[in-house]
Figure 1 (cartoon, rainbow, N blue to C red):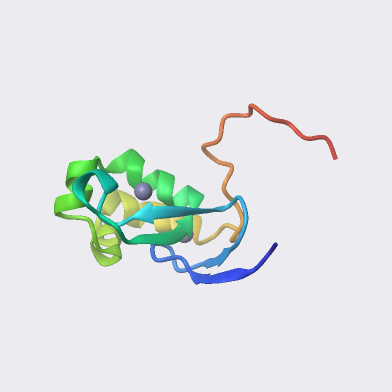
Figure 2 (cartoon, rainbow, N blue to C red; figure 1 turned 60 degrees about the horizontal axis):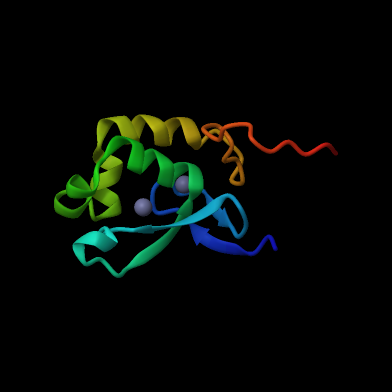
Length: 99
Ligand SMILES: [Zn+2]
Ligand SMILES: [Zn+2]
């Protein structure tokens, strides 16, 4: 736990192995994509909330293109101010742990 996987291709913050990290297929699997990259869960969700699979397959299959999208660029500026393991913003509060 806690292994660093390198920088996130979207926001550039470190990826720390665990629940804050997801995998993203730069080309959607449905479009024949095979290459999956590690990415923050919160960054991954943002991509899929802004872009559909067709847009991802045709125009946004490179991190540089994703970062140039105005809404994603705005998100990246915001998420860079958060700790690297932060991912709960869009999660519904379905599980609460008391500690
Ligand atoms: Zn990220
Ligand atoms: Zn994805």
